[in-house]
Image (tube, rainbow, N blue to C red; front, top):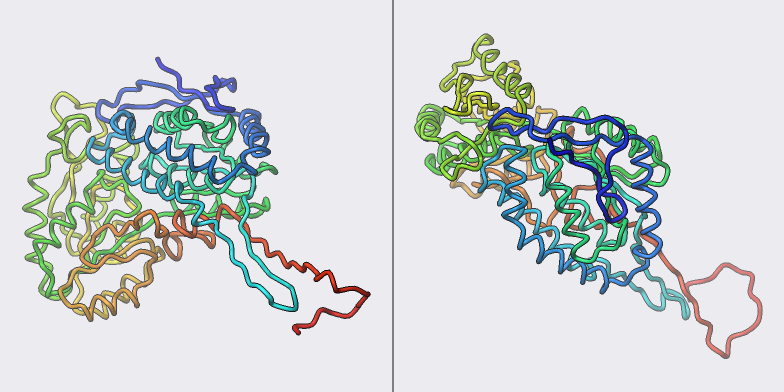
Length: 497
């Protein structure tokens, strides 16, 4: 059985802790690999490599950094099929979805290629007699990222390309369920000419996470995952003096007004609820249907859902793959039966779904729940699977109150032909990312990604301008170059004359 190791100091390093985790093929349910779990000492070795590399990388020219990043972008583009295959094999998502993930990650690499523009400082001249003031941004040092299983390539690329473009060095701890893509990203970075130690990858579990959060030489930590873990990451990291951005979970609502294009809304609900088997923090998991919209909309969603093709991710005919683990599959299924017990109508029950020839895979079909109320577990909890709940309300005001009462505020969407209603919604809804007739409003790379409330812990969103600010710190320099004719001693406070 293949064993996946760490990437430290520019080369593969075998794990020595003696602890390993299984890596499954979700389509077959078989363990095909194992991954070494890093000890505290192995995390420390990665940090030491990063700290040593920072001595030269942190003072390297912007031209040097961008030359590496441009080459890296070329290599990622050339290897996107290979990276997508690694994602499909370990996560289970269909190949087209995996390719899309790589493409969205490449957006941030391209943003990082333009870092000289983002790091331009400011200058005010003659603020006082022959006194100038400038502001600059400088790197932090060693920074780290802890990433989730659902986007094994994209989320790491949300972090380390921008961090290293800003002059930092990086320690990445990917999800132990999907380690191969991150390792490949590190290999390609080395091939692009990234100096040894600038990017390091350590695999592991909570031992590695806590070692990162507690390490005195790590200045900042980025995290994407569930809300309980995000809260823990933020609390522990900040208690150890670190800058932390921790993106948590979501319960994203899609509001459908009576004037909406219901065919567009139904297509969008299918894509946003069931794409990647619902294992997205930006998935739509609740449709809020206003007035008489619910019945025709549910009919259109059901018609489309019944036609979805579920199967192995490497089958070109498949539109949705399996869930990541059997345990997670069973948990998702429990919400469907639980919703029925709590009074919801189960329009589609996908919990008994299997794929011929792949009976041991982590399969579940799509489920559609109607007459869901806010008291039900299927509404309150982040299910992270292909389960779409429909909540019926009578008015827009009732809908916005329902949505804003959610403890999460990651993403949301409205479907309407009314520009005034859409504008009102985007101003009133309490969420960090809003779509108007767009079901998954993930920002492009030069804007920033992040939610509100329990969907984000910390002051900075990820990538975009917020990402640049997170991975740098500001410095203001006040300069006076006396004229050769100046002289004498003046102990008074400088005046603005």
